Amino acid sequence: MKNFLKKHWVKFLVGAIIIALIIAIPFVFTPSEETGALNSYKMTLAYNDENKTISGQEEVLYCNNSNNAFSSIFFNLYPNAFREGATSTVVSSSNFNEAFPNGASYGSIEVTSVTDSKGNALEFKIGGEDENILEVVLPEPLYPDESVTVVISFSSSLPNANHRYGYGENTINIGNFYPIACVYEDGVGFFTKPYHSNGDPFYSDVANYEVELTVPNNLTVVASGARQSSSENGATVTYNFAGQKIRDFCIVLSEKFEMASCTVGSVTVNYYGYSGDGDLQENADFAGKCVETYNKLFGAYPYSVLNVVKANFVHGGMEYPNLVLISDSAREEDCNYVIAHEIAHQWWYGVVGTNQYQHAWIDEGLAEYSTYLFFEENSQYGLSYNNMISNALTNYKFFVQVYERVNGQVDTSMDRALDQFATEPEYVQLTYTKGVLLFDNLRETLGDRKFMKALSNLYEEYAYKNINSAEFIACFSSSAGRNLENLIKSWINGTVVIA
Image (cartoon, rainbow, N blue to C red; front, side, top):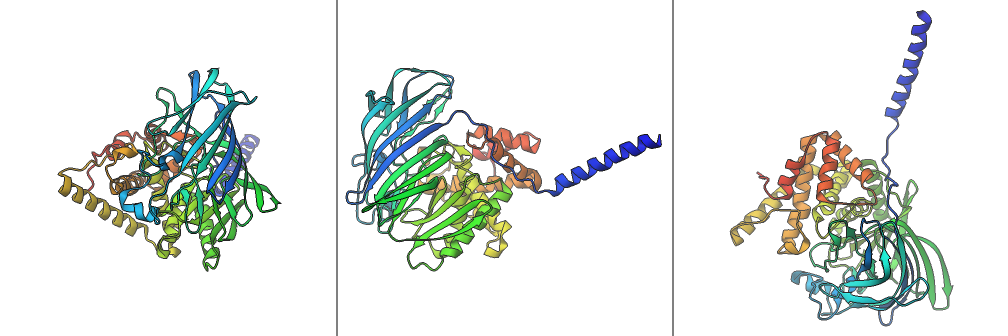
């Protein structure tokens, strides 16, 4: 009996020590590697600074991860929203002069040919609601789990605009410039909505990228992915970039860039400002603190590099994989806030994707609330979580009062398409501000531990995927151990009473 007790006591003691060690070791969620077959883009590009065009070709390996056979595949042509005569509006009337300081300017994309991998011409059509879609007709049906390679030659011309896509006084922003595959949803089809001035009208799957880019040698290049190599050839330089499991590919060029860097674990964080800026290292270190904080709160940033880029941009900032734009017109006192928000999008948009056209409240609400969490975790930057929540509540109530006074009523639903928000302020208040209030309410309802666990689970479970509202509710409910459907729907459908 003594030996029996002694033996089991030793087992118990060893087990207790192991459990204690597990509890003592900080547990960091890392994104799941479970994904379907990924599309890939191999691009060979050249930027011409004289006529402000980026031209070349992309070899796209397209994978059919659906349950249906395709006779055609579809690609977004976002630059055509900037063409003369477009019905899409790329910026609200209140922001037009800031976006186009030198007057109206136009850009577009021209698809010159589409072939298969052997060089055989494929039939293609330009369509959609606003010449925003490239349809590639396949020579034979593409069945589930099959893939096809298409080679698209194109040339994109940039407008003189302080926008995601355009050139300004200081930077050349080349975002959303190439044909990118439309997302296919089973039971819905290919998502082909045109550009809209509200929010970020983009929706894409993660893919693998290999990009060769040739530019004039006076320009510094910052891009998505990680730089692999570079080689000079007289007046030009050719760079090679690679990105695995990224949602898009963006390029920013300037002859005014200066860079400062820091490291967070295995991640290199670069801040690109302009020559003569005195805050380069300060901003790089702040960006590094953002990565460090979000790693701890949600899970590890899964890429090797993050570039924070000062740029001509009409809005405060913009997110792309491994790269965020920070407007050079942002007030100095707002710069940290904008950096924190845009870096949060690397988690909510970059890794966990959404249909930003249909469910903008998910990624914008989460990124905005994550910004609040950052400042709560880092009080040295002087922003109080409680004060920010109080201000958000005041701003939201004021918005509702004004709209009711002017219109007699106000639609406070959050889960609607970008083109269903009548104005930009309505969009901002119902995705950003009300989104923050929703997540603050969920935190208060669940308590800190369950709430933060839900965010970590969301990041782990939906890494490299796209999440919709129903899946978001299911994930939060599972993490909380209770059904949150009625609570969350009351917020996003506009029935909740906010006192």
